[in-house]
Image (cartoon, rainbow, N blue to C red):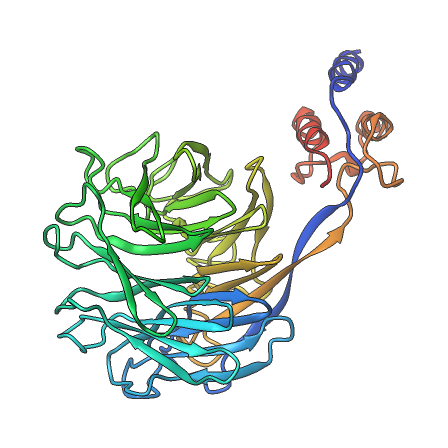
Length: 454
């Protein structure tokens, strides 16, 4: 009798739910990529970028030009075929070429954060033709100095290249700055935060889309909150500051702004050190670029201590990808990644690698382009300890989990079919997957039913 009353109440509630036709998009692992000449310690996958079917992957500790000189590899993102290996004309030991990568419009931008062009760890960046592999230009700032770490981050769009120098000292020690170049190597502008100050590390993460430059300053004090972090938006043409982005729930040492991306008016910002329910479990935020308003605060339902969710972020075509490189589902710090709907902020999928194991650090880097996702696992050991790899995932039409009648639409008949299975105690009604049939399965079903199948 109790079950009957419960089901009647649930059925009554369900009449206000609106179903939708369609199929879920399921993301499956399609490829694993490792370099043909991979070696221990290279940390291939420390950076990754995808554009128009070409994937660029950084290996900042590769020894091709001496110890830790670094390299970048280009792949066909659909087949996994290695296209070429990029090395700078003046490569040298310790430069860490490949610490950051970006690709757009047939041009690859690469950071070399420890290059000594303007002094120890002054840094540099390089531009390459993605088709030929030829070096187009070496980028160095007109006022570069020792310790600036120019090249720690790079981004590119529409002939404009963005390069971060998070330890530039213009507004105080390690206040940070960002430089803009064209694709011939000419410096166009230098950007500073309007309220920049000592220790902000402004420029540690950069992105660009639609003429808006997004910049992270992960150790900004954000008022009097130590290392809470912040992010900024600028006009790429004028260099004028448009907005400053801050979390609506800042805490000490969140490192908000340690990762950032922007697409179609939405900005996603990572805060990998935020302690939500656990120490450094991590979080991410979504903002409206035009107004600077916070739209969402994202934390994974299965977050754990020191997962570092938000260590990497990407957004494209309505999908937000977030790395959690110390997640332990596949072993100690094996890593994972999560996909969310950029508009509803609901979880689409959690990505785990088919051969994941302890110390892979999968999710250290992440990129997404036209439904194709690449994520780096710098600790993977296929070519020796910490040689690294990158995994590719693609969205495919999959079965809609709430279409219990199988006719391809979501309506009340699916609800009734589910409730009948629930009443019978059929394991097909175990919507939470915990092996028990209880009210939590019904609640989970109703959540999915209301969300529908896109």
